[in-house]
Length: 353
Image 1 (cartoon, helix red, strand yellow):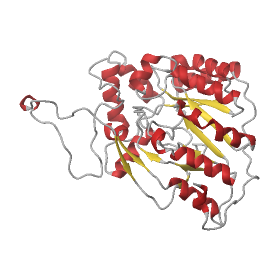
Image 2 (cartoon, rainbow, N blue to C red):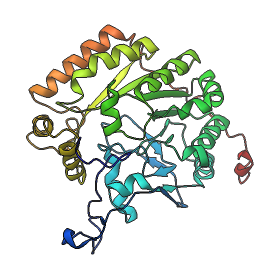
Image 3 (cartoon, one colour):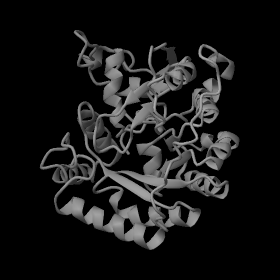
Image 4 (cartoon, rainbow, N blue to C red):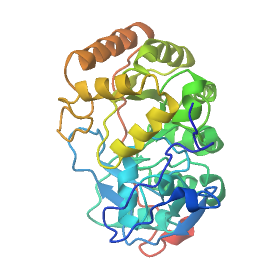
C-alpha cells in the first residue's frame, strides 16, 4: 500500500467538469504543508420538489428510486454515483465521500407522491444512487421515515445496502414483509477484509454483512446478495466463496455486475489502484478493459453491466455455477402491489411523521 489516505476510498479531488476554475498544486517544494489537509465530513441540506425518480435505463432492474442522501461516506472508490456529485458543484473524488447532502423533506415528498391521483403502486428502490443506510442515517433517520411512509401506504419497497444499520429497522421491515412489501439485497464484494479496508473503507465488515443476511432471513425478510462490482484481477477469484457464505447465511439469490469506469471513475480508480495494488494495477485495468471492448468505460445497454469477451464469460460462468450450487434460487420475489391504500386525507400526510 502506497500513501493511501486512511479511511478514504478516493485519493484526490478530480476537477468538476462544470467548473470554470480549479485549485491545483504547483511548486510543491514551496509549500510548508500539503495542500490537501485532513478531510472531514460535512453535511449540507437540500429541499427538492420531487423525490421519486422514474428509472429509464432498461438494464438496472428498477422502476422508481428514492435517494434521501447524495454523496456517500462509505467511500467505495468504484461507486458509479460519484459522477453525479459534480451536478452539486463538488468533486467526484474526496468531496463525494465527505461533502454529503441530506434531503430532510424526502419522507413528506414520498407521501405526496403516493397521494397523487396518477400514482399506481410500484416498487420504490432505496439506494438507487447512494447507500440509504450510510453513517449519517444514524442521525437523520430519513430512510426509516421513508419505510414508515411505505408501510402506511402499503407500497412495496426494495433496498440495497452494505451497512448493518439496516438491522435497526427490523421492526418496520418485519411489518412490510408480513404484507409481502419488501426485499433486501446486501452488497458483498469479497470476503477479504484487507481488500475491503482499501476498497470500501467506511463500510460494514464483510463478516457483519453476512450476519445482516442471516438476521434478515431469520426475521422472514427475503434477502439476496449483490456481488458487485466484480473487479477483474482483484475480486473475481472470490466469487464462489462469497456466494457460498451468503447462501449459508440464508440468501436465496444473487446478482452481479462487472466494474466499469465511466466519467471521473477512470482517473479516481486508476490513481487508487496504483497506490493500493501497485504490482497488480496494470493487470486489473487491462482485464477490466477487456470486459468492455477495450475501454474501461462502457455505456452500452445490455453490455455495460455484465461485460463481454472471454474474461467476462469466465466470470459469468463461475457466478452462475456458484449460484446454482449454493443458493436455493426460489422464484423471483413477487412484490404485492394490491395492498396499496391511502390512509390519510389529502393534505393530511404530514401526520404520518
